[in-house]
Image (cartoon, rainbow, N blue to C red; front, side):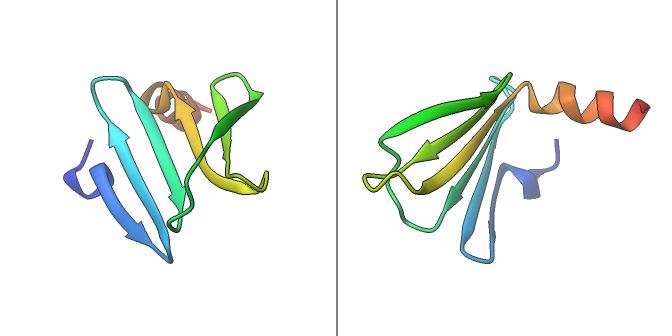
Length: 71
């Protein structure tokens, strides 16, 4: 995975890719995530203290990306 994807700030969102775990983390601003809700297999919405989305976690990211390129 390219170095640019490892840690990137895009319009107030921070994106971090953990290559060892194959997990993509997207954090929305500086909100602190207190809990995660799985909305699909390996797709987790991280919620702040008010229950608002604070981030998104995608497991098996590289695998998913490879599969989507084949379709």
